[in-house]
Length: 403
Image 1 (tube, rainbow, N blue to C red):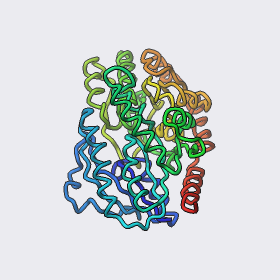
Image 2 (cartoon, helix red, strand yellow):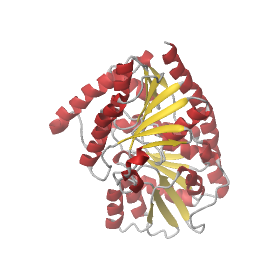
Image 3 (cartoon, rainbow, N blue to C red):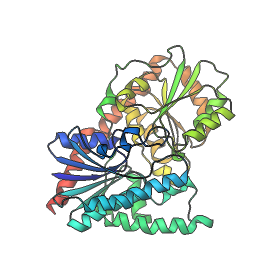
Image 4 (cartoon, rainbow, N blue to C red):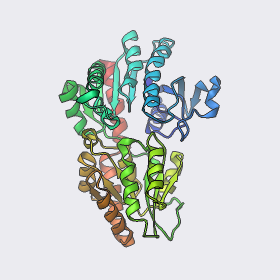
Protein backbone atom coordinates (compact mmCIF):
# COMPACT_ATOMS: atom_id res chain seq x y z
CA UNK A 1 0.00 0.00 0.00
CA UNK A 2 1.02 3.59 -0.59
CA UNK A 3 -0.23 5.41 2.51
CA UNK A 4 -0.55 9.17 3.08
CA UNK A 5 -0.52 9.88 6.82
CA UNK A 6 -1.78 13.17 8.28
CA UNK A 7 -0.52 13.86 11.80
CA UNK A 8 0.25 17.30 13.16
CA UNK A 9 2.51 15.63 15.76
CA UNK A 10 5.49 13.64 14.53
CA UNK A 11 9.22 12.94 14.89
CA UNK A 12 11.52 14.17 16.40
CA UNK A 13 8.85 14.61 19.07
CA UNK A 14 8.04 11.32 20.80
CA UNK A 15 4.56 10.33 19.65
CA UNK A 16 3.29 6.78 19.11
CA UNK A 17 2.45 7.60 15.49
CA UNK A 18 6.20 7.63 14.77
CA UNK A 19 6.49 3.95 15.70
CA UNK A 20 3.27 3.21 13.79
CA UNK A 21 4.53 4.78 10.56
CA UNK A 22 7.97 3.20 10.82
CA UNK A 23 6.41 -0.20 11.48
CA UNK A 24 4.18 0.16 8.39
CA UNK A 25 7.27 1.08 6.35
CA UNK A 26 9.15 -1.96 7.70
CA UNK A 27 6.28 -4.15 6.46
CA UNK A 28 6.98 -2.94 2.94
CA UNK A 29 4.35 -0.21 2.66
CA UNK A 30 5.24 3.20 1.24
CA UNK A 31 4.53 5.81 3.93
CA UNK A 32 4.52 9.60 3.61
CA UNK A 33 3.64 11.79 6.59
CA UNK A 34 2.36 15.35 6.38
CA UNK A 35 2.99 16.90 9.79
CA UNK A 36 3.69 20.15 11.64
CA UNK A 37 7.01 21.65 12.68
CA UNK A 38 8.42 20.20 15.94
CA UNK A 39 8.54 22.20 19.16
CA UNK A 40 10.82 22.07 22.18
CA UNK A 41 9.63 21.73 25.78
CA UNK A 42 8.86 25.46 25.91
CA UNK A 43 6.65 25.31 22.84
CA UNK A 44 9.23 27.05 20.64
CA UNK A 45 10.16 25.83 17.18
CA UNK A 46 13.21 23.54 17.28
CA UNK A 47 16.10 25.64 16.03
CA UNK A 48 17.19 23.48 13.10
CA UNK A 49 13.66 23.50 11.68
CA UNK A 50 13.85 27.23 11.07
CA UNK A 51 15.85 26.15 8.03
CA UNK A 52 13.45 25.00 5.31
CA UNK A 53 15.83 22.30 4.10
CA UNK A 54 14.63 20.23 7.09
CA UNK A 55 10.99 20.48 6.04
CA UNK A 56 11.41 17.56 3.62
CA UNK A 57 13.10 14.52 5.15
CA UNK A 58 13.27 10.75 5.12
CA UNK A 59 13.59 9.16 8.56
CA UNK A 60 13.66 5.37 9.01
CA UNK A 61 12.16 4.84 5.54
CA UNK A 62 9.26 7.28 6.16
CA UNK A 63 9.02 10.38 3.96
CA UNK A 64 8.19 13.50 5.95
CA UNK A 65 6.66 16.72 4.64
CA UNK A 66 6.43 19.61 7.12
CA UNK A 67 3.64 22.17 7.27
CA UNK A 68 4.67 25.62 8.54
CA UNK A 69 2.22 25.73 11.45
CA UNK A 70 2.26 28.18 14.33
CA UNK A 71 4.61 27.29 17.26
CA UNK A 72 2.79 25.88 20.29
CA UNK A 73 4.14 28.39 22.84
CA UNK A 74 1.79 28.80 25.83
CA UNK A 75 -1.83 29.88 26.19
CA UNK A 76 -5.09 29.03 24.49
CA UNK A 77 -4.67 31.54 21.65
CA UNK A 78 -1.34 30.06 20.56
CA UNK A 79 -2.78 26.56 20.75
CA UNK A 80 -5.74 27.61 18.57
CA UNK A 81 -3.39 29.26 16.05
CA UNK A 82 -1.29 26.09 15.90
CA UNK A 83 -4.38 24.03 15.22
CA UNK A 84 -5.79 26.29 12.51
CA UNK A 85 -2.52 26.99 10.70
CA UNK A 86 -1.87 23.27 10.32
CA UNK A 87 -5.36 22.64 8.97
CA UNK A 88 -5.31 25.56 6.52
CA UNK A 89 -1.71 25.36 5.37
CA UNK A 90 -1.91 21.58 5.29
CA UNK A 91 -4.63 21.86 2.65
CA UNK A 92 -2.25 23.92 0.50
CA UNK A 93 0.52 21.36 0.91
CA UNK A 94 -1.88 18.59 -0.07
CA UNK A 95 -2.56 20.32 -3.40
CA UNK A 96 1.09 19.87 -4.35
CA UNK A 97 1.09 16.10 -3.87
CA UNK A 98 0.64 13.45 -6.54
CA UNK A 99 -2.61 11.53 -6.67
CA UNK A 100 -1.02 8.10 -6.49
CA UNK A 101 -1.56 7.36 -2.79
CA UNK A 102 -3.89 4.42 -2.22
CA UNK A 103 -5.39 5.57 1.07
CA UNK A 104 -5.31 8.45 3.58
CA UNK A 105 -4.71 7.71 7.27
CA UNK A 106 -5.40 10.58 9.70
CA UNK A 107 -3.93 10.23 13.18
CA UNK A 108 -6.50 12.34 15.00
CA UNK A 109 -5.28 13.63 18.31
CA UNK A 110 -6.43 17.14 19.14
CA UNK A 111 -7.72 18.90 17.18
CA UNK A 112 -10.40 17.36 14.99
CA UNK A 113 -9.24 19.86 12.33
CA UNK A 114 -6.32 17.52 11.62
CA UNK A 115 -8.81 15.67 9.43
CA UNK A 116 -9.16 18.67 7.08
CA UNK A 117 -5.96 18.17 5.00
CA UNK A 118 -6.66 14.43 4.74
CA UNK A 119 -10.23 15.10 3.65
CA UNK A 120 -8.99 17.57 1.04
CA UNK A 121 -6.76 14.88 -0.52
CA UNK A 122 -9.48 12.24 -0.23
CA UNK A 123 -12.05 14.41 -2.02
CA UNK A 124 -9.69 15.73 -4.69
CA UNK A 125 -8.26 12.38 -5.73
CA UNK A 126 -11.22 10.15 -4.77
CA UNK A 127 -9.20 8.11 -2.26
CA UNK A 128 -10.55 6.41 0.88
CA UNK A 129 -10.04 8.09 4.26
CA UNK A 130 -9.44 6.30 7.59
CA UNK A 131 -9.40 8.31 10.83
CA UNK A 132 -7.79 6.95 13.98
CA UNK A 133 -9.75 8.86 16.63
CA UNK A 134 -7.83 9.39 19.88
CA UNK A 135 -9.53 12.56 21.11
CA UNK A 136 -13.24 13.37 20.95
CA UNK A 137 -14.50 16.68 19.62
CA UNK A 138 -16.23 18.93 20.44
CA UNK A 139 -16.24 17.78 24.09
CA UNK A 140 -12.44 18.00 24.26
CA UNK A 141 -12.96 21.76 24.27
CA UNK A 142 -14.38 21.53 27.78
CA UNK A 143 -10.87 21.40 29.25
CA UNK A 144 -10.42 24.89 27.77
CA UNK A 145 -13.67 26.13 29.28
CA UNK A 146 -15.69 25.90 26.04
CA UNK A 147 -19.00 24.18 26.83
CA UNK A 148 -22.52 24.02 25.38
CA UNK A 149 -23.98 26.68 27.65
CA UNK A 150 -23.43 30.29 28.58
CA UNK A 151 -21.14 32.61 26.65
CA UNK A 152 -19.16 29.81 25.02
CA UNK A 153 -22.21 28.00 23.62
CA UNK A 154 -21.92 29.51 20.08
CA UNK A 155 -18.26 28.42 19.89
CA UNK A 156 -19.15 24.93 21.09
CA UNK A 157 -21.99 24.64 18.57
CA UNK A 158 -19.69 25.75 15.74
CA UNK A 159 -17.23 22.99 16.56
CA UNK A 160 -20.06 20.50 17.02
CA UNK A 161 -21.20 21.14 13.45
CA UNK A 162 -17.61 20.96 12.20
CA UNK A 163 -16.91 17.74 14.12
CA UNK A 164 -20.05 16.06 12.77
CA UNK A 165 -19.07 17.01 9.24
CA UNK A 166 -15.48 15.83 9.56
CA UNK A 167 -16.18 12.55 11.37
CA UNK A 168 -18.93 11.64 8.94
CA UNK A 169 -16.68 12.40 5.98
CA UNK A 170 -14.41 9.49 6.89
CA UNK A 171 -14.88 6.12 5.25
CA UNK A 172 -13.83 4.40 8.47
CA UNK A 173 -13.08 5.50 12.05
CA UNK A 174 -10.99 3.43 14.43
CA UNK A 175 -11.42 4.40 18.10
CA UNK A 176 -9.00 3.96 20.99
CA UNK A 177 -11.74 3.44 23.58
CA UNK A 178 -14.98 1.43 23.28
CA UNK A 179 -16.86 4.37 24.80
CA UNK A 180 -15.75 6.56 21.88
CA UNK A 181 -18.00 4.62 19.54
CA UNK A 182 -21.05 5.43 21.64
CA UNK A 183 -20.07 9.12 21.87
CA UNK A 184 -19.54 9.50 18.13
CA UNK A 185 -22.83 7.80 17.42
CA UNK A 186 -24.88 9.78 19.95
CA UNK A 187 -23.23 13.20 19.67
CA UNK A 188 -21.84 13.32 16.13
CA UNK A 189 -24.38 11.02 14.43
CA UNK A 190 -21.72 8.65 13.06
CA UNK A 191 -23.20 5.27 12.07
CA UNK A 192 -21.87 2.40 14.19
CA UNK A 193 -21.03 0.37 11.08
CA UNK A 194 -18.44 2.99 10.09
CA UNK A 195 -16.49 2.51 13.34
CA UNK A 196 -14.35 -0.11 15.08
CA UNK A 197 -12.40 -0.41 18.34
CA UNK A 198 -8.59 -0.46 18.05
CA UNK A 199 -6.87 0.24 21.39
CA UNK A 200 -3.45 1.82 21.35
CA UNK A 201 -0.64 -0.66 21.72
CA UNK A 202 2.43 -0.58 23.93
CA UNK A 203 5.68 0.00 22.03
CA UNK A 204 8.23 -2.83 22.45
CA UNK A 205 10.64 -0.51 24.26
CA UNK A 206 8.34 -0.44 27.31
CA UNK A 207 8.66 -4.19 27.87
CA UNK A 208 12.37 -3.78 28.67
CA UNK A 209 12.68 -4.88 32.27
CA UNK A 210 16.44 -4.36 32.73
CA UNK A 211 16.71 -0.60 32.25
CA UNK A 212 18.90 1.30 34.76
CA UNK A 213 17.30 3.32 37.56
CA UNK A 214 17.84 7.04 36.97
CA UNK A 215 16.44 8.17 40.33
CA UNK A 216 17.89 8.20 43.83
CA UNK A 217 17.54 4.66 45.16
CA UNK A 218 17.10 5.86 48.76
CA UNK A 219 13.91 7.70 47.86
CA UNK A 220 10.44 6.43 47.06
CA UNK A 221 9.97 7.79 43.54
CA UNK A 222 6.58 8.31 41.92
CA UNK A 223 6.52 9.30 38.25
CA UNK A 224 4.11 11.03 35.91
CA UNK A 225 5.36 10.97 32.31
CA UNK A 226 3.93 12.44 29.11
CA UNK A 227 1.92 15.42 27.96
CA UNK A 228 1.20 18.04 30.65
CA UNK A 229 -2.09 19.58 29.55
CA UNK A 230 -5.29 20.54 31.33
CA UNK A 231 -6.88 17.19 30.53
CA UNK A 232 -4.01 15.39 32.26
CA UNK A 233 -4.82 17.26 35.49
CA UNK A 234 -1.24 17.39 36.81
CA UNK A 235 -2.57 19.95 39.29
CA UNK A 236 -4.02 17.05 41.30
CA UNK A 237 -0.55 15.48 41.52
CA UNK A 238 1.01 18.74 42.70
CA UNK A 239 -1.67 19.20 45.39
CA UNK A 240 -1.14 15.62 46.56
CA UNK A 241 2.60 16.20 46.67
CA UNK A 242 2.09 19.29 48.83
CA UNK A 243 0.30 17.13 51.41
CA UNK A 244 3.25 14.71 51.39
CA UNK A 245 6.08 17.25 51.58
CA UNK A 246 6.81 16.40 55.24
CA UNK A 247 7.75 12.88 54.10
CA UNK A 248 11.32 13.54 53.02
CA UNK A 249 11.73 10.07 51.51
CA UNK A 250 8.99 10.63 48.87
CA UNK A 251 9.76 12.33 45.56
CA UNK A 252 7.23 13.11 42.82
CA UNK A 253 8.66 13.37 39.30
CA UNK A 254 6.89 15.12 36.40
CA UNK A 255 8.56 14.12 33.13
CA UNK A 256 7.33 15.87 29.99
CA UNK A 257 6.01 19.12 28.60
CA UNK A 258 2.75 20.65 27.50
CA UNK A 259 0.45 23.63 27.59
CA UNK A 260 -0.19 23.37 31.35
CA UNK A 261 3.42 22.84 32.47
CA UNK A 262 4.05 26.44 33.51
CA UNK A 263 0.84 26.39 35.58
CA UNK A 264 1.95 23.18 37.32
CA UNK A 265 5.37 24.66 38.11
CA UNK A 266 3.79 27.84 39.45
CA UNK A 267 1.42 25.86 41.67
CA UNK A 268 4.27 23.72 43.04
CA UNK A 269 6.14 26.90 43.91
CA UNK A 270 3.10 28.51 45.56
CA UNK A 271 2.44 25.38 47.66
CA UNK A 272 6.14 25.01 48.53
CA UNK A 273 5.97 21.50 47.12
CA UNK A 274 9.72 21.09 46.73
CA UNK A 275 9.23 17.32 46.59
CA UNK A 276 7.96 17.79 43.01
CA UNK A 277 10.81 17.51 40.52
CA UNK A 278 10.18 18.63 36.94
CA UNK A 279 12.11 16.97 34.12
CA UNK A 280 12.06 18.01 30.47
CA UNK A 281 10.70 15.75 27.77
CA UNK A 282 12.95 12.76 27.01
CA UNK A 283 13.30 10.49 23.95
CA UNK A 284 11.15 7.37 23.81
CA UNK A 285 14.26 5.21 24.10
CA UNK A 286 14.98 6.70 27.55
CA UNK A 287 11.52 6.05 28.97
CA UNK A 288 12.26 2.53 30.32
CA UNK A 289 14.99 4.06 32.48
CA UNK A 290 12.52 6.64 33.78
CA UNK A 291 9.85 4.05 34.53
CA UNK A 292 12.15 1.46 36.10
CA UNK A 293 13.07 3.78 38.96
CA UNK A 294 9.46 4.37 39.99
CA UNK A 295 7.77 2.80 43.00
CA UNK A 296 4.61 3.48 41.01
CA UNK A 297 3.57 5.43 37.92
CA UNK A 298 0.96 8.17 38.19
CA UNK A 299 -1.91 8.77 35.78
CA UNK A 300 -4.41 11.58 36.31
CA UNK A 301 -7.30 12.83 34.20
CA UNK A 302 -9.68 15.72 34.71
CA UNK A 303 -13.24 15.06 35.85
CA UNK A 304 -14.96 16.42 32.74
CA UNK A 305 -17.18 14.14 30.67
CA UNK A 306 -14.67 13.61 27.88
CA UNK A 307 -12.02 12.25 30.24
CA UNK A 308 -14.37 9.47 31.37
CA UNK A 309 -14.34 8.16 27.78
CA UNK A 310 -10.56 8.28 27.40
CA UNK A 311 -8.33 5.21 27.47
CA UNK A 312 -4.93 6.97 27.30
CA UNK A 313 -1.92 5.62 25.46
CA UNK A 314 0.02 6.42 28.62
CA UNK A 315 -1.89 3.69 30.46
CA UNK A 316 -0.87 0.97 28.00
CA UNK A 317 2.78 2.05 28.18
CA UNK A 318 2.68 2.13 31.98
CA UNK A 319 1.25 -1.38 32.15
CA UNK A 320 3.82 -2.78 29.74
CA UNK A 321 6.71 -1.27 31.70
CA UNK A 322 6.19 -3.56 34.68
CA UNK A 323 5.53 -0.93 37.31
CA UNK A 324 2.45 -0.49 39.53
CA UNK A 325 0.01 2.30 38.66
CA UNK A 326 -1.73 4.83 40.88
CA UNK A 327 -4.52 6.70 39.15
CA UNK A 328 -6.83 9.59 39.76
CA UNK A 329 -9.42 9.14 37.03
CA UNK A 330 -12.98 8.13 36.22
CA UNK A 331 -14.60 6.01 33.53
CA UNK A 332 -12.59 3.81 31.19
CA UNK A 333 -9.20 4.42 32.84
CA UNK A 334 -10.45 3.54 36.33
CA UNK A 335 -12.19 0.46 34.93
CA UNK A 336 -9.02 -0.90 33.29
CA UNK A 337 -6.86 -0.29 36.38
CA UNK A 338 -9.40 -2.15 38.51
CA UNK A 339 -10.04 -4.92 35.99
CA UNK A 340 -6.36 -5.63 35.38
CA UNK A 341 -5.29 -5.43 39.03
CA UNK A 342 -2.28 -3.32 38.01
CA UNK A 343 -2.71 -0.78 40.84
CA UNK A 344 -5.27 1.47 42.48
CA UNK A 345 -7.38 4.38 41.27
CA UNK A 346 -9.17 7.18 43.13
CA UNK A 347 -11.77 9.55 41.58
CA UNK A 348 -10.58 12.41 39.39
CA UNK A 349 -9.41 15.46 41.33
CA UNK A 350 -9.22 13.60 44.66
CA UNK A 351 -5.76 14.87 45.60
CA UNK A 352 -6.10 13.93 49.29
CA UNK A 353 -6.96 10.32 48.40
CA UNK A 354 -4.16 10.30 45.84
CA UNK A 355 -1.72 11.43 48.53
CA UNK A 356 -2.96 8.60 50.79
CA UNK A 357 -2.36 5.99 48.07
CA UNK A 358 1.12 7.32 47.30
CA UNK A 359 1.98 7.11 50.98
CA UNK A 360 0.62 3.56 51.20
CA UNK A 361 2.64 2.49 48.17
CA UNK A 362 5.82 3.90 49.69
CA UNK A 363 5.39 1.34 52.50
CA UNK A 364 4.71 -1.71 50.30
CA UNK A 365 7.25 -4.49 50.03
CA UNK A 366 9.00 -5.26 46.75
CA UNK A 367 6.90 -8.41 46.29
CA UNK A 368 3.65 -6.49 46.82
CA UNK A 369 4.65 -3.94 44.18
CA UNK A 370 5.70 -6.72 41.83
CA UNK A 371 2.25 -8.30 42.13
CA UNK A 372 0.60 -5.16 40.72
CA UNK A 373 3.34 -4.77 38.12
CA UNK A 374 3.03 -8.26 36.66
CA UNK A 375 -0.75 -7.98 36.51
CA UNK A 376 -0.27 -4.94 34.30
CA UNK A 377 2.25 -6.64 32.01
CA UNK A 378 0.00 -9.68 31.57
CA UNK A 379 -3.07 -7.55 30.80
CA UNK A 380 -1.11 -5.39 28.36
CA UNK A 381 0.16 -8.38 26.38
CA UNK A 382 -3.34 -9.80 26.18
CA UNK A 383 -5.40 -6.72 25.30
CA UNK A 384 -2.95 -4.10 24.00
CA UNK A 385 -0.94 -6.28 21.66
CA UNK A 386 1.10 -4.49 19.01
CA UNK A 387 0.58 -7.36 16.59
CA UNK A 388 -3.21 -7.23 16.96
CA UNK A 389 -3.23 -3.48 16.39
CA UNK A 390 -1.29 -3.70 13.13
CA UNK A 391 -3.39 -6.61 11.91
CA UNK A 392 -6.48 -4.48 12.49
CA UNK A 393 -5.01 -1.33 10.96
CA UNK A 394 -3.61 -2.91 7.80
CA UNK A 395 -6.75 -4.99 7.31
CA UNK A 396 -8.97 -1.91 7.54
CA UNK A 397 -6.74 0.11 5.20
CA UNK A 398 -6.63 -2.69 2.62
CA UNK A 399 -10.40 -3.19 2.87
CA UNK A 400 -10.98 0.51 2.07
CA UNK A 401 -8.66 0.29 -0.93
CA UNK A 402 -10.39 -2.85 -2.21
CA UNK A 403 -13.83 -1.20 -1.86
